[in-house]
Image (cartoon, rainbow, N blue to C red; front, side, top):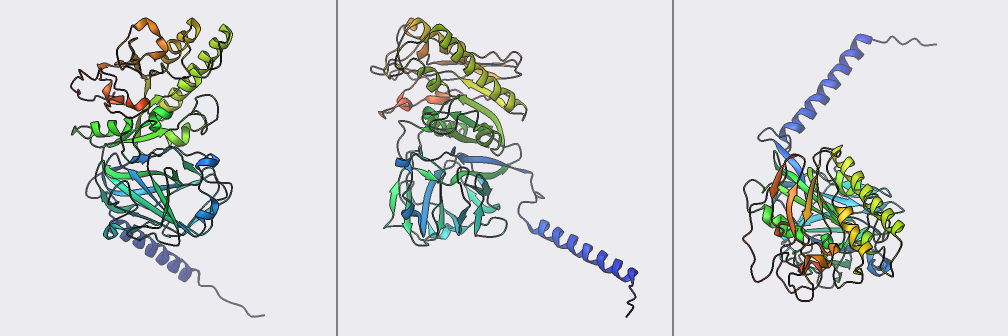
Length: 457
């Protein structure tokens, strides 16, 4: 048998040398990185986002069209920054999703697949351009130096060889996406591409902004999602809010995350997961979120007596459940230091939800005036009882329907009280059909837009 002598002192010195070398390499990587913050403290905030769901069969892309395919999608950023990162989602996938490459570029227009090839840049995920996302998961790209302006557009293009078994997307994009066979992620144009007005597999874009930057999440239904907005026009009320924020030096570093889903409910699944089920992903996980606007409930309230009146007990139960859902959101948001702004239900006279009766008209008044007492510094966007008739756009008698409360009159909180214009949220004077068409001020006498004041955190 051969004996081997072990020099423990030598091994110890070699191990120490390797450790020192590793520390030196990590330090040098940190020193040359543009994100280590040596020059100026910075913060990541969400600049664009879309709530994810399983696309309905009529909104899904045929699987054969996504085999050996390039998909190019255009998103509208709310805030600008010196760097960005893109979130790719497989939240509702039943199998792993593999993307061979993901690129970003500046589009030439928001309504075409044309990009500026000089701005094309490949993204990496943990250092690799090829990524595989487990089912139910989301991946965030590595930060990339890529300056973007506020209110500008960004093209996100990815290539996949095999279509997802179950697609994840956002049907209510009000923006056009393009798909074509072959790997054309860097192509200046996709002239042979098919197109559809939905988003797929991308969920957010974060930007690197100055220290103190923050974001607002708007959690809602079709009114927030953009029903009635112009395709590729970027004129949802959340876009208007983002534009308003850019008019003041004090609010230019605030991003807006639109987490609306058309037809969404607080209490039940349907078009997308119910609001409580998606709350963590669509609110708490958003980068830099400091404020939450909850603008949801019309589908829960209006659908109760949609086909006929129901009993007092059913009205009472629905009201209590809606209030409880709001309170759950408030508690979960406050646990993460997020200030909540509650928006009351907007007009729907003329829709098939509108069936005036004493019972129906009593629900929204109870359900949307959730007291902040006991819930911390929650802000409530209260309504007056004046409302707007959709057909004529005239102001009517307040006694007609509390369901149709329209005018946001003031922000009331347990810490502050400040007046705010209804136009902060829904000011539009256009002929677009749908809820987003309504200006909450009479069109013949629009008031000047006041400064926007957000409640302190």
